[in-house]
Image (cartoon, rainbow, N blue to C red; front, side):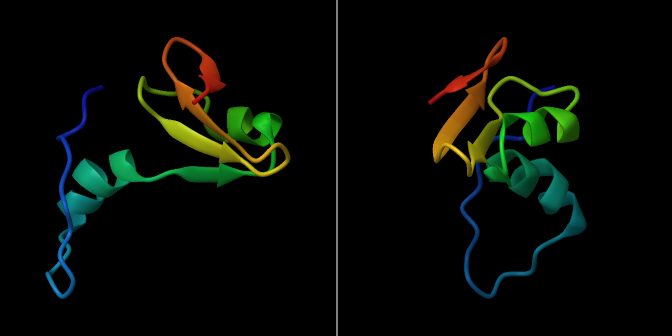
Length: 69
């Protein structure tokens, strides 16, 4: 599933519900206690997703599998 692209949000601008799904969800970094918690929460990851793992202080990215960034 491809996202809508990248958007720079401006302070004070109105955030529409569609922008939350189309932009914010694709532009955020999710934080998990560890890889097991990440894998339990994200059962169908999409290419390009990022996740930070607290136990190892590691930023991971999904391509065809989860790997360190």
